[in-house]
Image (cartoon, rainbow, N blue to C red):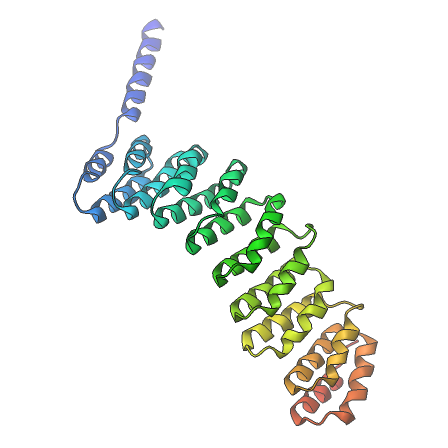
Length: 305
């Protein structure tokens, strides 16, 4: 019996030693990290990350000081894969200190994947970042983190000079802050933004918040010069509209633009409300536009209360 236990112990020790020994593939890839070509070093880190052996973390840590930003960025990916939550500190350090915005952006992306609440303070500090692409990545990481108490510090970015930051801030605020005071009002101000993509994202954000009191602010966008903004506004109003906001929608049946009146008809139909039916019946003989008249006639003939 003793000989049996001794044999088992020797097998376990041998297995542990073998597990600690890097594979031949890992050794070959680590050797490639000394190559002169940065593309070779980058590809070696990528393959090491896929192997995910203990050697991956060591190699990735050493590559964090590589002179080429793309290699350092790839090292951050490998480190996060190899160490998981334990990679948080070097990722935060790279976000705040690396001289390359490519690396800082990648660090924010990897922190977004981790979603570690402990990164909150670092991410908020990183909002001082000058690079637009890094600032956007930081906002996305904060949104993924799910900590609603950061929303007050994000609201000023809704007025940032760059549209990509304004868009990312609106998405983050809507994702995190449905219960935070001032959120709906702050996003509603973006409905008047000069950039159509910012307006479009603001509409989507208000729809995501699910607050019916946003409907009056959305109604003017049914006449927006951009087709996609109008479509998003229509979807949002249809989703948020209730009995208290329906009268404001029905007043658009008298709007000066036929396209707005047509959308008002369609929204009235979606409400299935008796007052909407009465408004459409009253509007039909007054409607001067043939297309809108046809929309009203079709709606009345297929009305389902």
